[in-house]
Structure formats: C-alpha cells, structure tokens
Length: 431
Image 1 (spheres, rainbow, N blue to C red):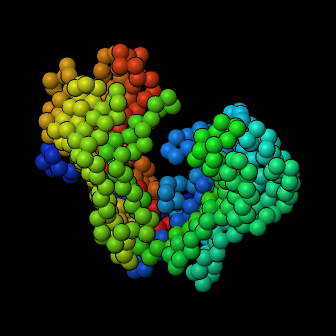
Image 2: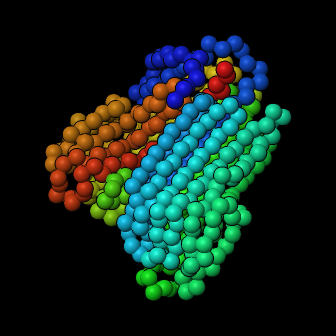
C-alpha cells in the first residue's frame, strides 16, 4: 500500500487551568500556506461478507469487516484495506460463506467490494457459488458525484431452484412462500451537492411469517455488503463525533450505547442535538437517573467547530461499588483555516464514591486508574487521544474493565463505559 505523505506536524501544549477546567490542549498545525477556501474531501468505504440479526440482536456478526475510517471516512488517499474470513456454521439460517472484502480510496474515488463464496441459507433453499458486491463513488471534474454498482454479480445463485447468473436489476424482489422474501442487488444511494454514497446488499433476506424452519419473525440476513461514499465540504475539516450515556462491550455480554447523539458529517449548522433517558437500568451491572447527551457542529469556510457532551445522574455500579450524583464529559474541537486543530477534553464528578477507596474524590486527577481486587481496573476521567492526521479526543467519565474472575459473575474482558464524549477530525489534506 502506498500512502501519501501528509504535511502536518504535531505540537502539544499544556495550559494552566483550575482543577475542574481544561485537562488537555492538543494542537497540530499544517505547514501549508493560508487557505481562504479550504476544500475537505473525505473518502468513505465499508464492506463485510455476511450478517444476520433480529432487531438489535446479532445472530451472525459481520464477517471480514473492513473500513476506510470512522463514520465520516478519511481525507487520505491512496489507501487500501482488505479482510477475509472463513464461513459460518449456523444451520438452518446460514452455512458456509467464505468472505473476502476490500475498501480503497484513490484520487476522487472511493470503492468497496465484498465477495462471498459457497454459501447455503435457509436449510438449502438458497445457495450460491459466489456473490460479489461492488460500490464505487466518484467525484467528477466539475465537482458533481456519480455512484455505480458495476461489477456486482451472482454466480450460480439458486433460489427455490431458480438460478441467477451475472448482473440482476437493482432491488429485485423474490417471494419466499411461507417464509418471507429476498431482495437481490439491493441498492440505496444518496447524492447531493456536498456528498454521495451507495450501499449494495447483494442478498437481503427477510423472515416475515412463522415458518417450518423455526426462524424468528423479523430475522434478516445480509450477504455481500459494500458501501462507498465521498464528502466535499468547503471547510477546514469534517468533524465526526458522538456522545452516549453508557455502553457495555464484550463477547458474552453487551449493551448498545444509551441515548446516543451522532454528529452528521455535514454538521448541524450550530443546532444542538439532544438525546436523553429519564432512567436507565442494565441488570446486574448498573443503574442511573437521567442521562442526557448533546452534540453540535458548524462547518464554514473559515472554521470547523464542534462540541459533544454526556451527563449521567444518580449512577450506581454493581450495587454501590461505584456511585456518583453527577458524571459529566465534554469535548470541544475547533479547526481554523490553517488546519490547526484545538481539541479540549474535560470531565467532572459530583459526589463520586468508590467502595474501599476513600482517596477517590470529585477532584481526582485525570487518567486515574484504580485496581479493584477480585474484579478489574477502574478508570476515572479517562482521556483517549488519537494521532494526526485523523486526530481525535475522547473523554470517558468512568470506565470499568473486568480482568479477573469475580463474584459478580461478569465475564473477563467486559468493558463498561459511562459518560462518553468524542470528536474526531477529518482534516483538509492537500497534495
């Protein structure tokens, strides 16, 4: 892989502040000359082989997933990332499906491909030798966008004995009697003056009725997913960010982010987005009162600015092991038209308490870690910084990582995050 040299240098500055104010100010400045009309182009690409789910419950996680970057992509090119995975054995839902995936960026083009081979679904009612998805997004010389699924094909796809080869018209629907239906070459695209994207699902199965296979109504199977996109924003940077109240990460036990707010890639024009919950209860792990998360961003010719916040009230973790009246996390980011990035992460507590650790108070230093005997490691006011050119700042108010067998019955490797705010920059990257 050949990667373009990015003309950015990193400088770190620490500023004197009060205990509850700014922890960290990180600046990285481009050596480029002053830009009056910065033009930030971002390349987006994701792909995977197979996935199956019912609502928010995963039956088969994405196989061979690859991505060019975060939600809003990357300004770097050329880049190329590949993945591969063995087949899945979960009859009658899915068997086989060796997956090969790739995402890439090149001058004015983002591309994603996914190939799935030797797959059988629904107890053999659907089989295929190969299923190839291709999604390409291109920005033309006049600044307009074009998307294409050229190259998306089937090889010996058999559905209830009917065989499909080569290309199939987009969004072809095939009924599956007493089961549901399947969409072939499912395509979803969006094109505007500032962005374009195309998602291709070569097979999308929907289980809509009670069936002899015993599959739950609402089950969906996706095979060969490819998504490409580009953004062209007249601003020094695109800001990709989010905030959420809690998240539990683990293979055996997990919980999706609560009350999440996700910054749109084109900004909010300064409007504050808010998501909240009156109460929260994650059985055997934690409970809380009101959870409130916000996000806002403004992308202009001269400045890109954004802010994400998370506030969790009345926190109680593991029956009082950790408690707090209020936990707050916040990230502020500003990028000027010299592509200088000013990113500030802060966190604060009101009434924080950790059983057996009286030294933990509201004024606990940033990036404090506490070893909890017979359980794991507790992190307080944790700051996680990514490196340029795709600089990011994330604040985790409280984080508990389980790394020991414990009396709570929690699996080793579990990661509990409480009060999270994040902003990642996709900066203008001129040649």
